Image 1 (spheres, helix red, strand yellow):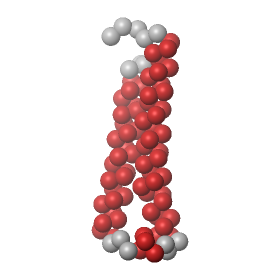
Image 2 (tube, one colour; image 1 turned 180 degrees about the vertical axis):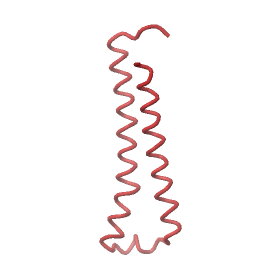
Image 3 (cartoon, helix red, strand yellow; image 1 turned 135 degrees about the vertical axis):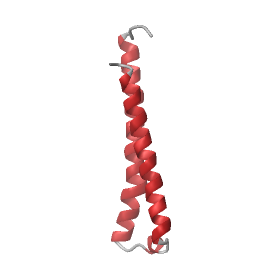
Length: 79
C-alpha cells in the first residue's frame, strides 16, 4: 500500500474515532446505566437475576473492547 494523502489520513482518523466513540457508548449504555439502576433501586433493574445481569454486562464490555480494538487496528495503518 502506498503513502496516504492528507485527506486519506484524516478519513482514517475519523473512522477510528467513530469506532472508539461507539465503544464508549457501549460502556455507558450497557454498563454504567444498569449499575446506576441497581444503585438507585429502580424496580425494573431489580427484576433481572444476578447471573443474567453478569452475562449482559460481560457482553457489553466485550463489545466495547472489540470496537476499541478495531479503532486501534485502523490507526495502525497510519504508522
